[in-house]
Amino acid sequence: MTEEVTMATVQQLIEFLGTFAFAISGIRHAAAKHFDWFGGYVCGIAVAIGGGTIRDVMLGATPFWMTNPIYIICTAIALCMVIAFSRYMERLQNAWFVFDTFGLALFTIAGIQKSLDYGQPFWVAIIMGCITGAAGGVIRDILLNNEPVILRKEIYAMASVAGGLVYWGLAEFGVPIQLTVIASFVITCSIRFWAVRHHVSLPLLKGGESVKGEDER
Image (tube, rainbow, N blue to C red):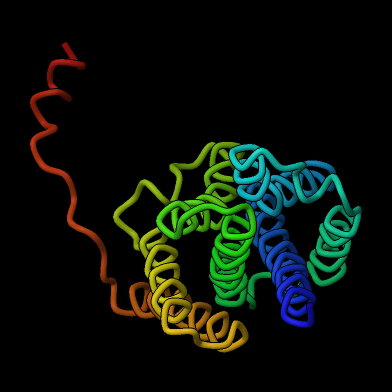
């Protein structure tokens, strides 16, 4: 019983922190596009709950934000923080990247844990973790009319998958949940930070020039 309570507490804390981190990231991107306050909130909430909502619908669960208003409130707090400290926004460019990376790692873990709670095998849980972590960013980029980060050569979703694989490996060896969560978080963030710092990316697809030429005709 104690372990179940611990798991529930850890998952709720992770979802709350992930919501805040992603909300900050989404609102900041909206501010860069000169959205108004309501537009910023919509963008923030879309990033914060988008991936988790898709996950819950696929699992046949009630979307997590519909069972507790704290996630809506959390996004409102994030909006107030961005408004209050708007004059410092430009100085915190690196901080927004960190918030986005933390959100990716935290929601990846939350997606894996919830999928396992619903009896899904680990390979499904890893995919769900990736959807939870990355889908919100896709929704954000569509709202902002940007090319989704997940479709570019930049390493984003693959960091989520790597974190999920670490979670699976440690769980198979019976490592305590707290250490498993920390290790998965650290690996996801480290890969993302390392890839951006050293400009490491996945290879680009080749052979599309002929298709582009046909489209122009």
